Length: 258
Ligand code: NAD
Image (cartoon, rainbow, N blue to C red; front, side, top):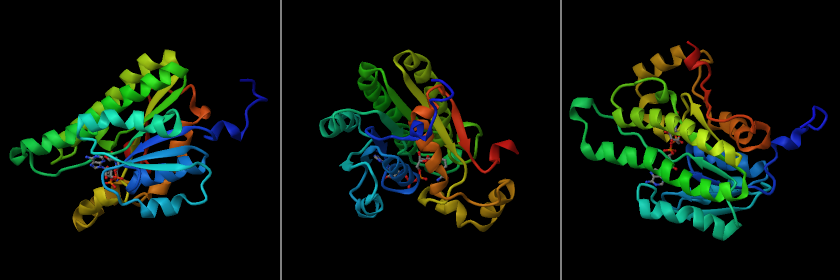
């Protein structure tokens, strides 16, 4: 690209198709709306069928949408996601691996099934979906995979051993996929959100002491809103980020800089 060629169309997703897992709630809903407003068709993979609010928020967006129910802790169901998106929109250009879960308990009491459930969704689903999407993207030599990491991709935390382990692994998987897929013109990056006000973080926000501790450590001084991630996901999904690969991008109000 010459310097003169650059314009804001480099951020446009017009004509692209994006899969967003868990795209009907919390941060995932913000990614869905942002990508659709930037022009992409969105294939929203959800655990349940509470689609109404997101459908309403999507009205007026440039891209069209399809909602698809799947339990992503089930490998058989994971395998059907990419073919279902290709069946609807003909292809997949962007995959946002957003669905995730967290279970809090002291380590010495941590239950085996909590470990298994968190790892299945936060790590296994990311691997299997990314591999399936990458096969379609490699074929056409173009694609973007955006994983959702966390501050717990860098730090240890407490009471959440599989969450921390899975989010560290998501950072590793991002780099490993990026290295192999770059030659196919597929860029793989991750967003590491800081502290956002969603259902996931409701228990710590309602704990007065913990809430105050967290707020005092965030240079920006407030819990972020899901909309604070909309520009980032569009950037990572667009041509504007074509030379960015294997990066874990923190959007954290300065948390990691402390
Ligand atoms: P959320 O609970 O609103 O979103 C989780 C999504 O995953 C939901 O849409 C849920 O339906 C879906 N999901 C759960 N189990 C599923 C299953 N078995 N199959 C398919 N989908 C399933 O919480 P959120 O805060 O929006 O979290 C979204 C992502 O962002 C997660 O990966 C989370 O770890 C990450 N994250 C959140 C924060 C934060 O501050 N909220 C910070 C860092 C990272």
